Image 1: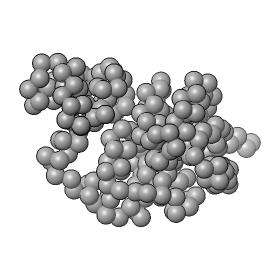
Image 2: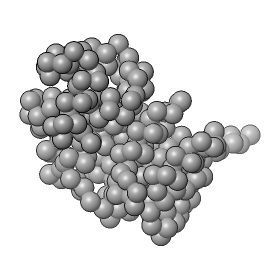
Image 3: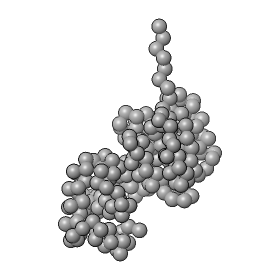
Image 4: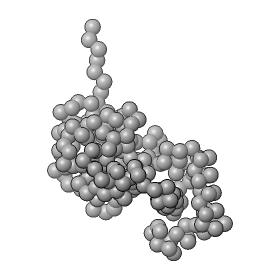
Length: 215
């Protein structure tokens, strides 16, 4: 008696070039484990698609540079869903800062467009198993992120928290994005306020805006 094959996992692919979206669709169809179920070409379209997303969609493939915003916004929105969507970044323009921001916001993988379909499928399979995939072609960007000094890492963490607070997110929402517990996020924010010397979250965000840390 044959064992029925599992249905392909649904994927939302986000890129402002239709040719790239078509290529991703072909790669995934050839592999068979994943299938592009929904497409979007902008951050605005993603927000619309997320409102009516089919239940079988559990993954997002997204470019960082979109015509009306950043793929970081897409990662944040995907991670805020219940249950959160797993995100793999597919981009042609890697750098350590972007890689750090994408991973900090909850991305499970980072793949260069030049890498081809095998790397993308591998990244999605890793995300499906709760693992992280970084394209080895990233080279120096990976080294920079993995060896970032503690003080710079703390600054990046603080900036990330300030950005999420500026978005008006609750501790629960921030925890879902970062893969933390709400109590852990609350402790991190309390420490941030103490380091900034401000009495409230609103004051921290206001100070950060004046300093140009968040916009």
